[in-house]
Image 1 (tube, rainbow, N blue to C red):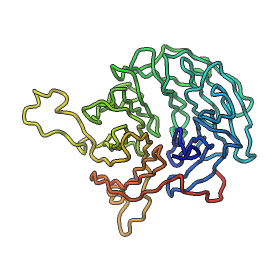
Image 2: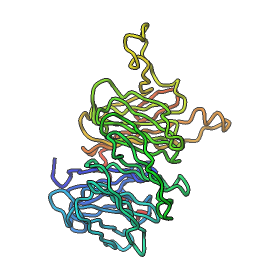
Image 3: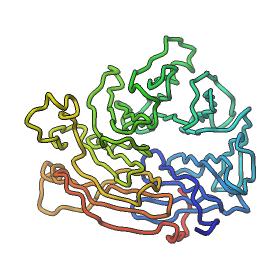
Image 4: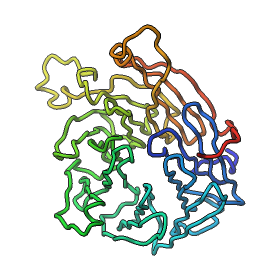
Length: 364
């Protein structure tokens, strides 16, 4: 592949309506539905970039340099303003930045063994820091703005396989409390995510065979879903906007779609004697799936199909509502499947998003 077309990382914005593409040649921002390039910044403007965090569809994005032609060190966080086409904020850390998350009033940065929370936009100052277990994957998620006033972060707890939950509002007000955590897996965490309402989280370990969904209020497990029987690297987990479904991508080249609300929709093994196979026989398998290039890292998400259904009641429309499930891959391919609640999943579109050009609009 041409070096200038080499993709370093991909990431959705908070509502999965856009995704950023970090490249050796700069950064590109794409709209998901319809697929169109919203803006791009070339290497002369931003250098090669390893990480990009959007703030919904605003003019502000957070960047961390990387790749072979970086403009800055990877321990410097940069905020770029699309309106003025320049960097407006720079924060230097003692070590490499593993992850960045943003909301309208805060920036959260994960280093290898610590997390730092800053006020934003101005005056930008550090509110507090905390020590963490080693976090080379940069696992850190922030509750979406769709969750109202909730401002919760989740990240790996000090016990291997656990998820620590921290309410930033309580910490900001000086309220102290014992650490809240969920013992999610026996092995190290590989992936975690919120639903849009920040009432549930989904987790996967480095084993990659099981995905667990947890109730955030009670800290109890809601369901255990089986991706497969052999180990895999989980790249991405995302809930649908109504929290009824969950999608998962891995290095096996398959995107899996699970039911989270109506669990009876998930597939199960038809084994007469379940005692021989134990919990495995009772596993809930994906109700639908589709394939992408194997061993090519990709991110996946749902976007609603807003097609008008004529002559149907609202209840009938809800029952028949379809989702698009999309996957954007590091090889530059974009896969779009239409998924209905019966579990049918059919290809609706395919593109090479690197060949999709600017629509001459601003990011806003």
